[in-house]
Length: 216
View 1 (tube, one colour):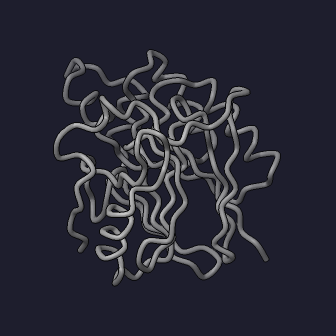
View 2 (cartoon, rainbow, N blue to C red):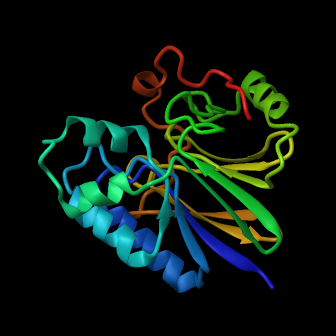
């Protein structure tokens, strides 16, 4: 029996595409929903976005923008959004349909920065990055690695795991559904726009971001 997992990331305080992604997941009959972090940042409707995620039963991890929001907001602020962000772990591990999923915002084991960047500004695979991450991830035990952070949309076998970045709902206009145990992924466009493989290359390509990192 196929298990379907809805995948979103980098929703950035923008509820409209999240609402559309959740409607797609309901229509497709997903069994679980995962969000690879960065719920805050860029947008201005954090409370509404958090409410959508919380009401959907989505499991999420902490992103760098979420941590920055908590570090820079009024220390006396204790709204629903802040309580939600404080509750998020840096890593989620789960097993579904006999397959293990490891979710982190940027890169394993628990980084919020230094994400997995596989695509150039045109959305084409960078062979050196693909080969390097394949070496880094060759001996990990999990079957699926779910990441976000880089605002890149890709599904690639790197070493042992299938690595999935569903893209940002706000910037890549995309969400995805993972099918288990088949390990296949279907990408869905959002807001009537074609998915953007790689968004904001210049600003997101800061020094040190996207370098290969260690895995524990």
